[in-house]
Amino acid sequence: MKFFVDTADIDAIAELNDLGMVDGVTTNPSLILKSGRDIREVTKAICDLVDGPVSAEVVATEADVMITEGRKLAEIADNITVKVPLTWDGLKACKVLSSDGLMVNVTLCFSVNQALLAAKAGATFISPFIGRLDDINVDGMDLIADIRTVYDNFAFDTEILAASIRTVNHVAESARIGADVITAPPGVIKALAAHPLTDKGLETFLADWAKTGQKIV
Image (cartoon, rainbow, N blue to C red):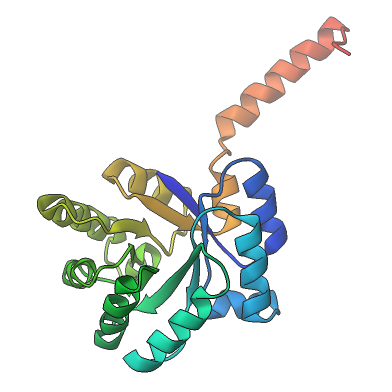
């Protein structure tokens, strides 16, 4: 499973990238706002740092303007993935942009039917939002499983990019179900390494080592 990091924080991306933990990056208008930087400047910096796909999102709501914005964003770097919303206009834009040979990430997916439409429109990635479904007492992982089944039934090439990842359990379940990609904030990715028994075991080992009075270096 590929790891995308969901942020526009260059330092956070660089830290994870140095460890080989970054297969791509996703951004959105909220993350650009949080970065405090110009969208073209920060997106170019991310693309220079990361070899994999970098999602940059359009902000128009009409298909023609989405297409214009998408083509403009794609000029930033060769690894740009144009991100469009899962609306009817977004699907129209997806079809045109994917026909141009661009990578397209269709975002804000909340149903299997939406995912099916995105695949038919040529989406490179479909982004079902797990956490936001959980917020309304719907199990977001069920959606990932259902999309996986449908895509496998018909051999769609569109990759399932599990988004709105809130917890380490979301990551583990996405991997178990067979999502192709997860995108998560840096803090969630780093939290994957944490376990209380690891901490307890290390504490015991260090205490016993101190009793030996030895040094390795």
